[in-house]
Length: 199
Image (cartoon, rainbow, N blue to C red; front, side, top):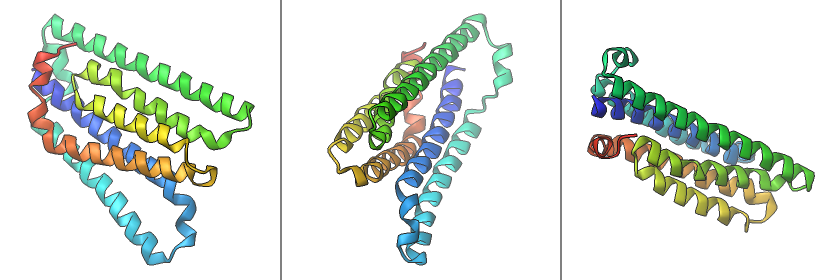
């Protein structure tokens, strides 16, 4: 049952990473869409949306292979249900802290008239939130997502202000989609770690 739950949860993570990748790349490239020829814009969109769709489809296949449905928890033993409640509570706690930090970063950047730093701070906060998620869900690869994302976010602070949003968006978007693709590829191999690292 734990393996099935792990794969089901991993499929949700892959979908979230894919959508996040689409968001970051859209943030980075959207403002420049009208500055290039239409066919260049169309090609970029095809690659980005195609990659996102392929990863989400991979997540769907993993979910189907898991054979798990949320209703299955009702018929599982009490320890498994209790563990799932702890996992959900821990996840919601991380999301809440992330939201508070993002909101604080926006307020501080605007207060000091540094709106160009907002997305770099957001990228840093989003990246760091993958570290506790790695522990919560037993997916050690999330640690690497957090580390690499943090490096990209910190590096973006050194970029000239006009190009900061584009640089961090491309870096984060590429990382999110690449991570999503990796998890689709290695999802089944990672599943046993759920048995070794129960939450």
